[in-house]
Structures are given as structure tokens and as C-alpha cells.
Length: 411
Ligand SMILES: Cc1ncc(COP(=O)(O)O)c(C=O)c1O
Image (cartoon, rainbow, N blue to C red; front, top):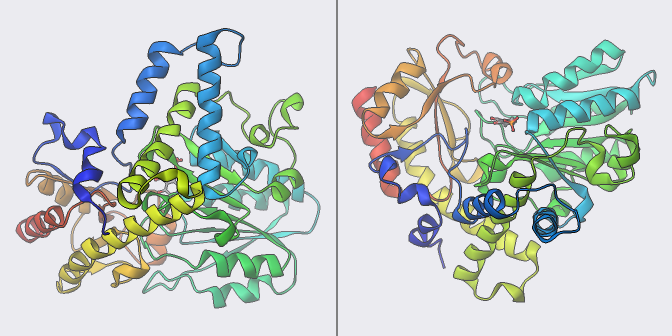
């Protein structure tokens, strides 16, 4: 059964909102619409449970239980233990803290790390700054024409066995090619290195199956995965316990607190359980009663549904853009190998073009999207930036048709 798009859209109040009628949303890589269960839980928390959690009175107990539920259910969906998942203010804040832990771990060890020039700055700059500490930073570079990150080019960087950590994206927020995470993690592990995967651009298209990917750290941002403004970090126990505690000394024994120095946003953590509600609702609608399958199996089934729909809706847009000779389509031309995040370099600044699209009922953006390094490596003029057209599984073929029509009018 293909994805029931009408059912999907009924789960998002934005599609029923009068304020958004006539607007097709193509800046999902910046942040998605929020699903109803998340909004309902956020409202309930602020209404009925907004007290310090884990105290011995009912409102507090309910609030704490809902926060635990969010962590437990999201962890189960991805096939990890509940203490291997932690919440932070954002992915940028999560990598910042993690990099500080790695700094302490590798100080004075003649170690090296690998970073890419395909990453968003959140999984790049914090790691590069470890060079201040004498840690060698090796750059795994993309092909300047295609943006492709070739695993064969990683192999020589790992050869001498000094690399302790490889940081790379599941897919870039401008190149959008889906990197072979399992293969890269296997290469890193064989060379004695851990891996840190930025999944922010990929997770909106399907939450990860952590065992299948083999990553030691996987990061994504709930505000792009139909949830509230939180960063989510999965850190596998072996790596998490190797790194020094970054939280209060008495919290270091709890893995899910070790890399969260700040107090979490209780309401938003609790509301993240709504993302699991949404995945379960999609599973049940398409495959029947959710109780018959494990959370991971449900997640994988929903992931497959989302991707199949996205690929079908994306290919005509890629074909349409590839047929034009007045723009440069960045990343693969086949929908199967990429996320539906489509950046194009134009012969003029992108932002005014995005503004012109808005007049045609298309919400999109232009700029560098904090992907300064990949755009520079691709030779894109940063003063123009790229026009980015990004969508997810709730986007219809008709909306993509509307986008193509609008592009033809404004370009
Ligand atoms: C690929 C990628 N990584 C990391 C980030 C940073 O996420 P956050 O805003 O949660 O810090 C973004 C944000 O746009 C992103 O697109």
C-alpha cells in the first residue's frame, strides 16, 4: 500500500490552517511542520503538567513520566537503549558539547580526526577547532563537480591508524546525496575509529535503524522531524562511556545526562513522544495494529513508505531542473540516491528569486544554509548562494507541479 497522503496531511494542523492556505511549503530542510500529537502534548504539558518533574505529586509525576516516555519510545524506534538517547537544545549545541568531550579525551595523544567539507557547519567547525589542542584534523573532500563524498578517498586518511573519530553527514543539506553510512562506519571501525554522523538532513525522511547504520553517534533535530525545537543525540554506550562526563559530576553515571550540561526543556522533551505517536499512527493506518510489530520494525516500515513517496514525487522535479541550461542542479539527478532537498545555483542571487516564488504561493529560501564549506568547494558564488527547494513525505505531486510552474515563471 503506498503512502496515504490524505491521511498524512490530516495529521498536520498546518495543512488545515487558514493562514497557510494556497502556500506550498518547500523549506522543510530548514524546519518541518509539526504533527498534531506533538502540538497536543506540548499544549497539555504547559496546561496541566508545567511543574518541576519527578517530584511526588501528580502533575509532576505525569510530566516526568511523559519525558521518560519520549526518550524510551524514540530510542526503541531506533533500536537503542533508552539511556543512549539524549536531548539537547539543538544539534549545534550537541556537537559543541561532544567536541569538548573529545578534546579532553584526545588531548596529548598524537591522535587525528577526520572531518568532511560536505557537512553543515554544525558537524564541522567544532571538530576543526580541536586542532588548537594539537589534534590533527584531516579533511575528507568532496568531488568539486558533483559534491560526492567518495569512501575510497577516506581509506588513505585512515591508513596509519591514528584517526580516533570520523565525522560525516548522512546526507548534506545542499548536496543531498545519501552517503553509505554503514560502509563508512565499517571502514572507520576497522581502522580503530569511532564515528559521528550528522543525520539532521536525513532523519526527516526516515528515522535511523542504528544497528543497521553502525554509527557511534547519530544526531538530528526534532524541529525538522515533525517535532519541537530540540536536538536529539543517540550515542552508543561504548563511545559514551569512553568520553569524559560534561554534566554535573553527580550526573556522570547516567549516560543520557553525560553530554547535556544544561537543564533540558521539559515540555519539549515530553512533546517529542508525539513524534513516536505519529510514526505509530502511520504504521497502524498502513499496516494494521501496531502492537504486532516491534517499534523498530514499525519505524523501518514507515521509513520505507516515506522514501517511496518522496522518490516518486521528487524525480519529475529533478528532470525538470536538469532540462534547464540556466541553472546548476547540485547533487544526484536520480531521486533514489538522494533526499528531496534540491539546491540550485543560479545566474543571480537566490534570495530575491525565493521572494519572487513567494508571490506564486511557494515557500522556499535562498542563501548558504550554513553549508559554506560545501558550497565553496563546489565553486558556488557565496554572494549569490543557492535556491533550496526541500520537501518531505507530506508533500504532494500537485505541490511539486505548482513549484515547477512557479519556477518557470520567475526564472
Ligand atoms: C545538516 C544539518 N546539520 C546540522 C544542523 C544544525 O541543527 P540545529 O539547528 O539543531 O543546531 C542543520 C540545521 O539546519 C543542518 O541542516
